[in-house]
Length: 163
Image (cartoon, rainbow, N blue to C red; front, side, top):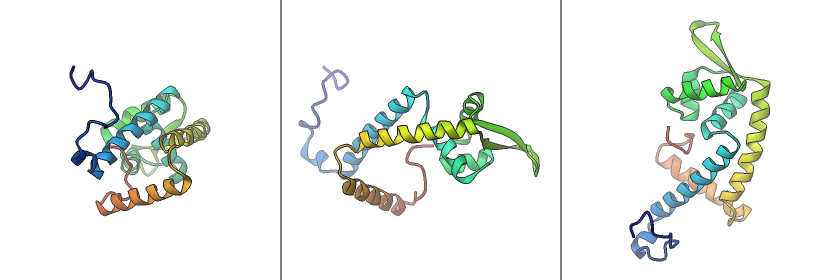
């Protein structure tokens, strides 16, 4: 049997020195959270980038593709595809920027606002699934500690997934 076919032992046979590494535990927890969120959004025919763009437009208002890319962490080359999907579903609209007709301004539609409300509810459910073993106080502490780590390493305000 190789690593890919062996059953997961939950870390029981992981060397102690590896189990003591906070960075390893953090990475494993992040991978599990990523799987839960990705699968949950996929069941709703959504993607984390869809949610990020809709949430950004709802909070900050109309924006250029470049601004959306910067605010969401979605790479500029991927943003076009994300916006194409959202526009095809009637969730966002593209219109020429009146100040520079070569650029587009992206706006959230009423349908996009409704979809965002549905995805907000789903995110609440998924976050509860990810954080199920933690009390509300533990969840708040975890968030505070993760924000502190992120700020220390220069990524404050950046999305928690790779661009």
